[in-house]
Image (cartoon, rainbow, N blue to C red; front, side, top):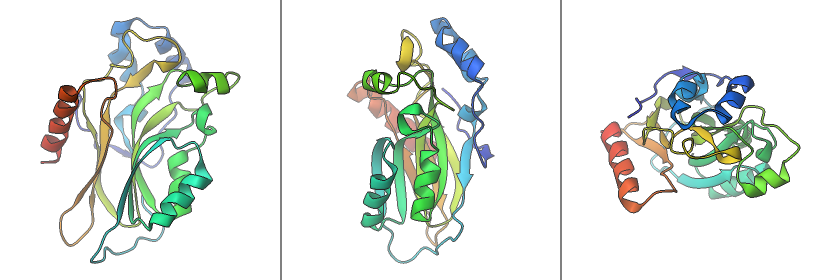
Length: 225
């Protein structure tokens, strides 16, 4: 099992494009060797809000699978309308052609006046699923990062990435645009509040079964405990 990631970075470094091109063509047993050479898989991007609000007697939390976070303006409007103080965000891109090669988390957080903690779940070795490959056939990924985040008006402490599997599930036996480095994970952080509260944006394996997802949930609870 992969280790909990505590290292922090103001900005995650973009992977070496030559390394990613080599990984896309590598044999199935090469996953760990290539993943170890991608610093973005081993750090948390943490940026506090410019103006942090004190935690009041009530806290509103929104959880949302944003499916790449492709559509910035509607996404910001939707979350703003909820009045959320914290957003638990899954499936957010950094530098993917399918989402405009943007830092989607930074753009959304700044629009909402929030800070963020972001962890990489996968480094994408292609453009995405079949539709995305068709729509963006003439484009390239700038970074190829895909992951989960916590956005907050309040101060976040101890942000960590909690791995939920051994990694490599989306590498071995796969080719083309759906091959990936990395594995399922949860982004977790502690809210700076009078009473202890951990916030977690978890993303379990979709190509699996209930028993496997239950094991991932057990790993998550054990890590937080």
